[in-house]
Image (cartoon, rainbow, N blue to C red; front, side):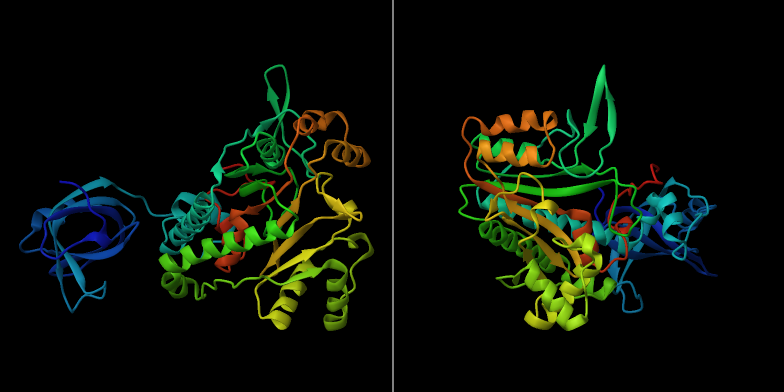
Length: 429
């Protein structure tokens, strides 16, 4: 008999369901099981008098064991599990569990040690349903707007893709590096004439950071597109992309998120507020007495990001805000400049930067000059080749999927939103 999901059960139709035992309760006349699969839970009611063989089959079985049951679902006003119960005809024990080494009170790091058990909860499984909907909404938006999905290599030959440290990898008779982003290859795609591309894939940062929003491996949602007039078109594209993703989440899981996380999924309106960095400094100083530290002038730090989100809500009633006009010393060499100002932005949401985007420099001579200015030579020679034979003006950005999910659901750490977290002190499970 083919298995069906609990949410698909129809009244008085004999079917097979399978899942984990969430709870098992043995009373004088009955055995009650709460069975859980990815779609939900249902009460299974076993009458000891009429089904002694089923009781026998459950001997030694405890919570979190896996079983398969055939039977029928019936409606019952006495059952709390959605007014439905399952009356079994057969039970097969697929896997007996031992007593679990963790419970919901365990610390986050202990839960990470037993991540496969931690992920069994409804709350944690909802995180990945939401993340899937978010990515799917964004991906469908791009495909409907003539973007192509590509997959760039994660083993690269040079270590100068960004300012972050890189992981070295032994690659046959030489060293290779794990890619910090697909940036160079996204731009190669522009030089290839693909015009509009995106990628959802892993990125690696060898930063010895132990904050709630940093990780050594994460999932990045990247895009790049050609024939733009200026970087405001990149901001426009990101606005539409984020709205599409959040609309999909709200449609599929808005009510469930409200029930489990106590949060409303807010789909933002266009346009998102936009402010120049120096103007922002003045506002933060005037409103909150914030003075940017000397070493952060021309950029933003975590405290400034939090205050910027507060400012956006107070001034514009908006959760998102673009910040532009960063110092060239704080931006990558491949950002186009106008009047010596990088033509890019950071996007702040709920007190955290979620994107750095920009129009890229596509003219070979200027790009080579800016690379030299940053002290980059041989490491970017292969990259500069992309621009010697003609390349259209283009721009793009990247969004960290894990960070976006964390902010969406109001979670305290990236550890919650990643299937398996990787940090300076964690390589297992």
